[in-house]
Image 1: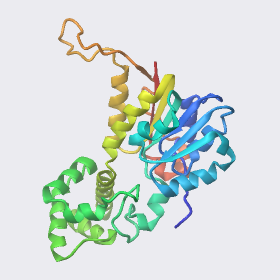
Image 2: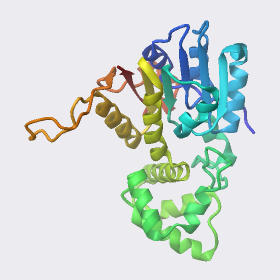
Image 3: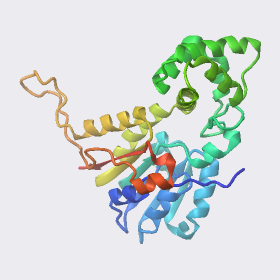
Image 4: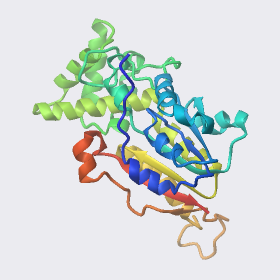
Length: 310
């Protein structure tokens, strides 16, 4: 296994946005290598930080990085979509700040055996949590033509979705598709155009498979609801997303919390009983600075949104 490394995206912007209180209670629901968590922990005096991740390697790396703060940190292995259940045995609620970094870590991309990257030949895995059974290999070999087309189009927004899905179904008649190189070859022959167009299609299909394997969009929706519930009044939720599907979910959820009515505008009297429960801090998402983009190419698509509970 390679050393777990991950350059935290929008680090300063996230920490500033969380408005850390030295005696506060904080949660990093996707601790990764611990970059954001380290900056939170070092600002705490009597406060506490809870670190959650479903990736065992990530938790080990974060524990090592934050070892000097072991008296004020709690580490829990699990999916952030289950944060309420994960926190229940510890009796922790009323958080001053919660953050979620939805991106794949640099380690997960670079570690060949994980199967997240188009660069190296590797098993078709893509599991964030290796305890689960569903892998990209199972999806590629066992999903129907219609199911493959649907996830490639909806999660990858790929225009050649049906052609790629059809070629996968045809190719697997000759034997099981087990490696990233096999899948890459199928995708490339399915896409018309220059090499850069083929590369973009590869990335979109890998994104779609990763989302399906890890149920990422449903997990995000559930995590936002739980995180907002767990915040105390005045607490802040900061979420970093990396593609439009994620950002749309975050934006719509935050907008809902800020509304004080969801009735049809044509309706003369409000009957919904909806109350405004949050103030959006970021009217537009915060993106990486020019300096950060020079140092970390993976920050290009990152968007940070922050909401404060009232």
